[in-house]
Image 1 (cartoon, one colour):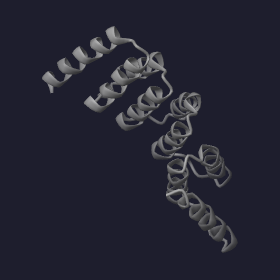
Image 2 (cartoon, helix red, strand yellow):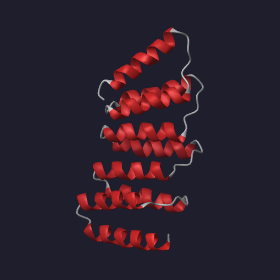
Image 3 (cartoon, one colour):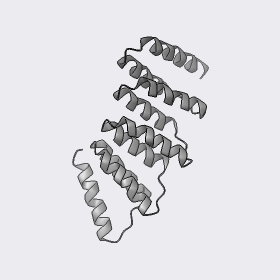
Image 4 (cartoon, helix red, strand yellow):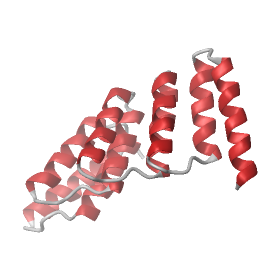
Amino acid sequence: SDLRWQQALALLGRMRNDGIAPTAISCNAIISAYGKAKQWLRALDCCKLMSSHDLVPSVITRSSAMGACGKGNQWQLVFRSLELMRNADLLPNSITYTAAISICETGEQWKSALGHLELMRKSKVMASSITYNAAIRACEKCVQWQQALVLLEEMMQTEDLA
Protein backbone atom coordinates (compact mmCIF):
# COMPACT_ATOMS: atom_id res chain seq x y z
CA SER A 1 0.00 0.00 0.00
CA ASP A 2 2.99 2.33 0.43
CA LEU A 3 3.45 2.31 -3.34
CA ARG A 4 -0.17 3.19 -4.11
CA TRP A 5 0.40 6.86 -3.43
CA GLN A 6 3.25 6.82 -5.96
CA GLN A 7 0.96 5.13 -8.48
CA ALA A 8 -1.71 7.76 -7.74
CA LEU A 9 0.83 10.53 -8.28
CA ALA A 10 1.96 8.94 -11.57
CA LEU A 11 -1.67 8.69 -12.69
CA LEU A 12 -2.21 12.36 -11.90
CA GLY A 13 0.89 13.21 -13.96
CA ARG A 14 -0.38 11.13 -16.90
CA MET A 15 -3.74 12.89 -16.69
CA ARG A 16 -1.99 16.26 -16.88
CA ASN A 17 0.20 15.15 -19.81
CA ASP A 18 -2.85 13.88 -21.70
CA GLY A 19 -4.70 17.14 -21.09
CA ILE A 20 -7.28 15.49 -18.83
CA ALA A 21 -8.38 17.76 -16.04
CA PRO A 22 -8.69 16.09 -12.65
CA THR A 23 -12.18 15.57 -11.29
CA ALA A 24 -13.35 15.66 -7.69
CA ILE A 25 -13.57 11.86 -7.76
CA SER A 26 -10.00 11.40 -9.03
CA CYS A 27 -8.70 13.89 -6.47
CA ASN A 28 -10.59 12.13 -3.67
CA ALA A 29 -9.04 8.81 -4.72
CA ILE A 30 -5.57 10.33 -4.77
CA ILE A 31 -6.08 12.00 -1.37
CA SER A 32 -7.23 8.66 0.03
CA ALA A 33 -4.15 6.89 -1.37
CA TYR A 34 -1.93 9.55 0.16
CA GLY A 35 -3.67 9.11 3.49
CA LYS A 36 -3.12 5.37 3.53
CA ALA A 37 0.59 5.98 2.96
CA LYS A 38 0.76 8.69 5.66
CA GLN A 39 1.59 11.29 3.02
CA TRP A 40 -0.50 13.99 4.68
CA LEU A 41 1.32 16.93 3.09
CA ARG A 42 0.73 15.55 -0.41
CA ALA A 43 -2.94 15.02 0.48
CA LEU A 44 -3.24 18.67 1.46
CA ASP A 45 -1.46 19.69 -1.76
CA CYS A 46 -4.05 17.72 -3.71
CA CYS A 47 -6.79 19.71 -1.96
CA LYS A 48 -5.07 22.89 -3.15
CA LEU A 49 -4.87 21.43 -6.65
CA MET A 50 -8.64 21.02 -6.60
CA SER A 51 -9.09 24.72 -5.93
CA SER A 52 -6.80 25.64 -8.81
CA HIS A 53 -9.05 23.57 -11.11
CA ASP A 54 -12.25 25.13 -9.74
CA LEU A 55 -13.22 21.84 -8.11
CA VAL A 56 -15.20 22.17 -4.91
CA PRO A 57 -14.01 19.92 -2.08
CA SER A 58 -16.81 17.80 -0.65
CA VAL A 59 -17.32 16.26 2.77
CA ILE A 60 -15.58 13.18 1.35
CA THR A 61 -12.62 15.27 0.21
CA ARG A 62 -12.22 17.01 3.56
CA SER A 63 -12.74 13.77 5.49
CA SER A 64 -10.08 12.01 3.40
CA ALA A 65 -7.64 14.87 3.92
CA MET A 66 -8.44 14.85 7.61
CA GLY A 67 -7.76 11.12 7.76
CA ALA A 68 -4.42 11.63 6.01
CA CYS A 69 -3.46 14.25 8.58
CA GLY A 70 -4.47 11.90 11.37
CA LYS A 71 -2.42 9.04 10.00
CA GLY A 72 0.52 11.41 9.82
CA ASN A 73 -0.02 12.38 13.50
CA GLN A 74 -0.94 15.90 12.44
CA TRP A 75 -3.97 16.10 14.72
CA GLN A 76 -3.83 19.92 14.83
CA LEU A 77 -4.61 19.99 11.11
CA VAL A 78 -7.68 17.85 11.72
CA PHE A 79 -9.20 20.71 13.70
CA ARG A 80 -8.39 23.07 10.86
CA SER A 81 -10.06 20.72 8.36
CA LEU A 82 -13.26 20.65 10.40
CA GLU A 83 -13.19 24.43 10.64
CA LEU A 84 -12.74 24.71 6.87
CA MET A 85 -15.68 22.37 6.35
CA ARG A 86 -17.95 24.46 8.52
CA ASN A 87 -16.75 27.71 6.92
CA ALA A 88 -17.54 26.25 3.49
CA ASP A 89 -21.03 25.25 4.65
CA LEU A 90 -20.09 21.57 4.41
CA LEU A 91 -21.77 19.69 7.20
CA PRO A 92 -19.49 17.14 8.83
CA ASN A 93 -21.30 13.83 9.20
CA SER A 94 -21.03 11.07 11.79
CA ILE A 95 -18.14 9.44 9.94
CA THR A 96 -16.24 12.73 9.79
CA TYR A 97 -16.69 13.43 13.50
CA THR A 98 -15.84 9.86 14.45
CA ALA A 99 -12.64 10.09 12.41
CA ALA A 100 -11.76 13.36 14.14
CA ILE A 101 -12.38 11.85 17.57
CA SER A 102 -10.29 8.78 16.68
CA ILE A 103 -7.47 11.08 15.64
CA CYS A 104 -7.80 12.88 18.98
CA GLU A 105 -7.36 9.52 20.65
CA THR A 106 -4.14 8.90 18.70
CA GLY A 107 -2.88 12.38 19.60
CA GLU A 108 -3.95 11.95 23.24
CA GLN A 109 -6.21 14.98 22.99
CA TRP A 110 -9.09 13.94 25.24
CA LYS A 111 -10.47 17.47 25.66
CA SER A 112 -10.61 17.92 21.91
CA ALA A 113 -12.36 14.56 21.55
CA LEU A 114 -15.01 15.75 23.98
CA GLY A 115 -15.22 19.04 22.10
CA HIS A 116 -15.96 17.21 18.85
CA LEU A 117 -18.58 15.12 20.63
CA GLU A 118 -20.20 18.34 21.83
CA LEU A 119 -20.09 19.79 18.29
CA MET A 120 -21.87 16.66 17.09
CA ARG A 121 -24.63 17.24 19.62
CA LYS A 122 -24.99 20.90 18.65
CA SER A 123 -25.08 19.94 14.97
CA LYS A 124 -27.70 17.27 15.69
CA VAL A 125 -25.40 14.57 14.31
CA MET A 126 -25.99 11.24 16.03
CA ALA A 127 -22.97 9.69 17.71
CA SER A 128 -22.57 5.94 17.27
CA SER A 129 -21.06 3.45 19.67
CA ILE A 130 -17.91 3.67 17.54
CA THR A 131 -17.82 7.43 18.15
CA TYR A 132 -18.27 6.99 21.89
CA ASN A 133 -15.65 4.24 22.04
CA ALA A 134 -13.10 6.50 20.33
CA ALA A 135 -13.83 9.29 22.84
CA ILE A 136 -13.64 6.82 25.74
CA ARG A 137 -10.27 5.54 24.49
CA ALA A 138 -9.00 9.14 24.23
CA CYS A 139 -9.97 9.67 27.87
CA GLU A 140 -8.42 6.34 28.85
CA LYS A 141 -5.09 7.19 27.20
CA CYS A 142 -4.96 10.40 29.20
CA VAL A 143 -6.01 8.71 32.46
CA GLN A 144 -9.33 10.56 32.52
CA TRP A 145 -11.23 7.54 33.82
CA GLN A 146 -14.03 9.56 35.44
CA GLN A 147 -14.80 11.24 32.12
CA ALA A 148 -14.58 7.86 30.39
CA LEU A 149 -17.21 6.50 32.78
CA VAL A 150 -19.48 9.48 32.07
CA LEU A 151 -19.19 8.78 28.35
CA LEU A 152 -19.85 5.09 28.86
CA GLU A 153 -23.04 5.91 30.79
CA GLU A 154 -24.09 8.40 28.12
CA MET A 155 -23.46 5.84 25.37
CA MET A 156 -25.53 3.23 27.18
CA GLN A 157 -28.43 5.67 27.62
CA THR A 158 -28.25 6.66 23.96
CA GLU A 159 -28.31 3.04 22.84
CA ASP A 160 -31.26 2.31 25.11
CA LEU A 161 -33.22 5.03 23.31
CA ALA A 162 -32.40 3.67 19.85
